[in-house]
Structure formats: structure tokens, C-alpha cells
Length: 143
Image 1 (tube, helix red, strand yellow):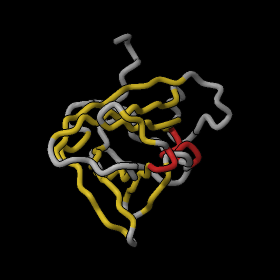
Image 2: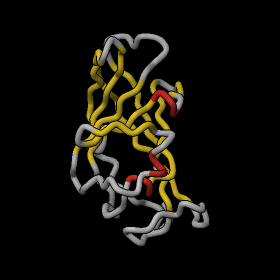
Image 3: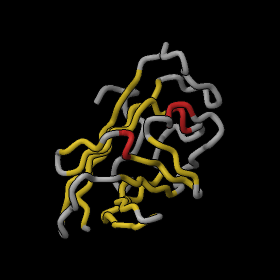
């Protein structure tokens, strides 16, 4: 990997289990995620996108949510968040809807995180002028 392209520590970032949760009569799957970013002093909008794949099936962003301290943010809106910070080693959760039920047992989760190369902590690249970089975090999880 070229120098400067790694911005997180992959090992242990995703939990090793998926939960099925009923929230207001709607079923969501949930997986824990821990902030192991090397540049952790950024608002959530520093993430230009997050893409979630379960067993090689992409989950639409509109069906994925990042939950931190009780606040739910849809993946489609994360890049706009300027006032919520995810602190180093802080746990959060990813919730997602899945068209079909996942079978009990092991599943492959891939989470592609794309962030701006703008490293000024309080500034976001809302105009999209800076290059982006991506890393994929993978985990075998059990339901």
C-alpha cells in the first residue's frame, strides 16, 4: 500500500457478530464498528462515503445507518455532517435493512470507507476538490 493511503487500522474495527433487531416493527441487522482511524479528529462528514457489502451483495446506502451515541445518520447523508465527531476507540453501530433474511451462521462483511485527503481537522471538503482514498475492512461475522 502506498505511503499515506492507509488511514485506519483494519484488525478489530468491525465486531465479529451481526444482531437482528426489531425497531418500531422494522427489522434491522446491526454490526459494531470501532473508531480505529489514524486521523480521528474529523467530523463524520470527513467520510465521503461508506459502502456495505454482505456476502458479496451490496446494501443500498438508503438502507444503511451509522448510529453513534443514539443518533442515526443515513449513509446517504454522512458526508454532510459537520457537528458530530466519532472519537478514537469509540464504539458505534452500523444498522442495515436486507431484502431477504440472513441465515444463521457465518457471513462475510465488507465495509469500504472512503475519506477525503484533506487533513485539516475542522474543515470538510464539501466542494469535492481534494482527492479521496478508500480502504476496505472485512470481517467474518456470525448471526
